[in-house]
Length: 169
Image (cartoon, rainbow, N blue to C red; front, side):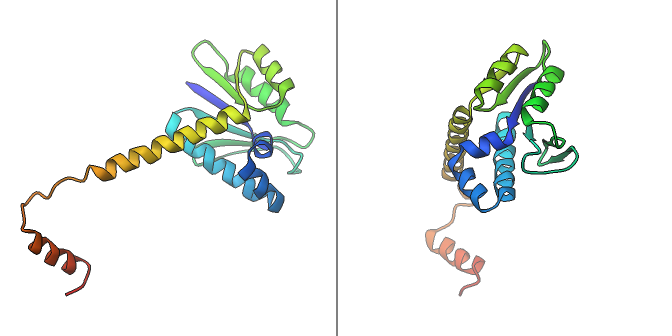
């Protein structure tokens, strides 16, 4: 299995769309990131874990699932980096590959030492853009592959049927 552990606030701070949302409402920025990561997970097949530290959300640690994502809020005195390092040690083994999405240079060096690979915020963003383009291309191709009518009809008869279907006479 391939895991992608995302440093949530680091990515929010790095992506322009999420930065704008953060200025208005940090909750909206978090929700938008989770939406994007759910799409990424569905497309890539990776298991995505998003970690938010207690800098913006005070209280005890919590973990829950949304859109099949694992979302972790660290406890109040724990940073996302500490949580991510712990997760990498738990997840990394011979069979599984772990990527960490962060642009924090110190964190990247630490996770390399634990056997994980990194994706910078920019790399993840480029990957997301490429994924979105692939999806658009697939939709365009599918829409052009409309099956022909099973019953050959005169175009005038097709027009009458289409008017009936749309409720017009």
